Structures are given as structure tokens and as C-alpha cells.
Amino acid sequence: MVVGAGAAGLVAAGFAARSGARVTVLERTRTGGKKIVASGGGRCNVLPSAFRAEQFVSASSSNTIKRILATWPLDEQRRFFEDEVGLHLVLEPETGKLFPASNRAQDVRDGLVDWAVREGATFRFDAHAVDVRPRDGGWTVTLASGQTVEADAVIVATGGLSVPATGSDGAGLRWAKSLGHAMVPTYAALTPLTATPAVHVALSGVSLVSTVTAGEGKKARVATGGFLVTHRGYSGPAVLDVSHRFVVDASTPVAVAWDGAPADVWDERLRAAGTVLAAVRRHLPQRLADALVAESGVAPGTSLAQLRKADRARLVALLAAYRLPVTGHEGYKKAEVTGGGVALSEVDPRTLESRSRPGLFFCGEVLDAFGPIGGYNFLWAWTTGRLAGLGSGKGV
View 1: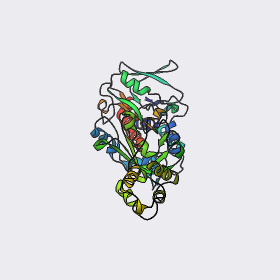
View 2: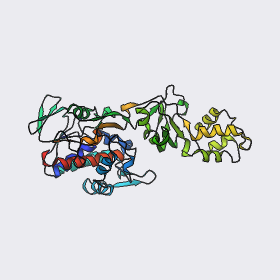
View 3: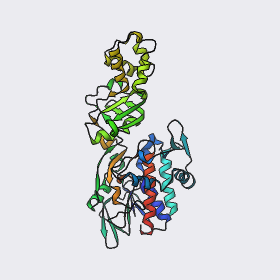
View 4: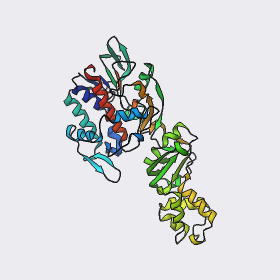
């Protein structure tokens, strides 16, 4: 039995059925795969075009993550989606992301459901599982209706706590903890950051590629990508990819290098011809440029040739290492994923079966690992779903 018809659960169901198991999928919503349908602005970034295991965040062993990700190479996953699910994937060159040619996320969800059914899985929608308990030689799943369903094995693919509107309520995490598994404390990851007061509300809508750093020294987390000023704070891939550092420790400094340029580049830019404002506007959106120059206290019409050393240094600091006035975050409501979860040491990395509870498997977001924006978390879901499905064998 598979509990949850999200990304990991759909793949788990199909591969378990392919192995000869009689598979029933219990899904609390009417259609399943709501996060798939909502992802990528309705397009679904199915996979990245390349990845490194080091890009994934976990309190668990990095070697375990490498072992898990190595079980299903990226090129094989792409062939799976194209040849078996029937989705032609197209590379978006500027981002390195792979999307369905139709640009319809619903096609990904529907394609996976159809594939799992062809493999022999049966789906029960509007079947809300509220508890999972061991019984002699197997497992009992209790539904919200009071009905119980028995199975020889259970794959927990219920997701985490992020985007609760899609049906994620952390049930699988609670079950894992109640059954004695070691848990890494959960937290919202890949979530927008906020500022109270919203000192940059006048810049809401400003967007540009930038480099964001959370933390300092060797433990700093750095990401380059889209940066967006919102009416409540800051978002965009570069912010989301480092936001977990602030979520876990609110004393973590968050700084941005506007347009990704380091201090030496900005210093050089401020030594060319023209005025201070003109030089900054050449590289940044006008509203942002105007605001930063005003914050520096340097007269915007100052000639670069006459710019004093101290003023140049102050400008460079604002342009290459601007300390964002972050005071909070949007939490699970807008988080792309959940950090933490079932410690990877609790499962056999070859099958994702619980080491302490035979016949119980975990996959997807309930496990302690997540990757950056760009299809990496679907990659984790597909890979772990397949492992759990194959690992469960005929016991599901």
C-alpha cells in the first residue's frame, strides 16, 4: 500500500506494481499530485539538466544522499518520463530546467497516474489516512472515516508540511515519530523572507539576477539567480535557496550582491566616466538604483571622477554586500519544501525500508533532504519513490 499520491507516491506505486505487488494508493484529495500541478507556475519543472549531490541540504550523511541519488541516473529518469510516461521534455537553456513540451504541469500528474494504473496500481481518492500501525505480519491504516485497511507493507509518501493548501499536513512525519524513528527537527525551506517594517515596499516588483549569501565564513550558503522585491520582503530563487539558514537561525545575516557583481567589479564600475546615478542605473533597474544611491548619501549627480574614496567605499558596500533587513519568513504556507524529517540513518538506503519497522518504507519529502529550486526536489521525489517501490517488492 502507498499512502499519498504526490510526486514520490505516484512513482512508488508504479514501480511497486511493476515488481508484482498488488498496490493500492490511498490519497486524501480528489485527484492527487496537487504540488505537481501547482509547480513551476503551472508548467512543472520535471528535472534539472544536471545536478550534484552536494547541492542537497540534510543533517544526515552526505554519503547516504549520494548513494540514493546514484541509484537512478538523470539520463535514465529523462528516458522514463519520455518513453514510459509519454512526456517529451524540453530544455530551457537559460535556466537549465527540463519542462514538459506542453508546458502543462497537469500533464505530468495525469501521465504518472496513467502510467501507475497501466503498471497495475489501484487508486482510492478521497481516502484520508490518519494513522498507520503495525499488526502481526503487516500493517493497518486507519482512515478518517473510521475504516481500516490492512497491508503487508506500507510506503509513506505523504509529503511534509509545506503548502498545506495542497493537503500536506505532516501526517507521515507524525507517524514516523510515533513509531520510534529518529527525526531531524522540521522547518520551512525554500520560503520567501520578510521584513517588518517593509522598508523596501516602494521597490515591490523590482526583479533582477543577484547573488544572495546567508551566513558568514565557511558555513555561508550562497545562491545566484532571480531576486524579487515583494510588498512583504524578498523572494526569487536566489533568496529561496538560502532562506532555510535564516529560518533555522534568525540571527543569520542575509546579504545581496546586486546583479551578482562582487566588490571589485562595482569598484571598477564607479571609476568610469559619468555620474554616480548614471553608473549604477547602467547595471540595475532604475527604481533600485535610485534607492541605493539615495541610501548611500552620495549626491546622485556627483561625477565619478570627483567621487571621494570614502563615498566610493560606501557605495560599493551597498552594491556588493547589501545587508537585507530581514526579520521573518513566510513559513510553510509558501515554502516549496520541508527541511528535516526522518533521519536517513533510519532507513536502508538500498530500499528505503525502516531499519526498525520492517515493511514500512519512506520516500519523498518526509525524508531529511531537500535541494535548491530548479527541479531538484522532484528529482529527489522520483528517485526515492522508485527506490521505495522497488524495495517494497511484493509486500505492498
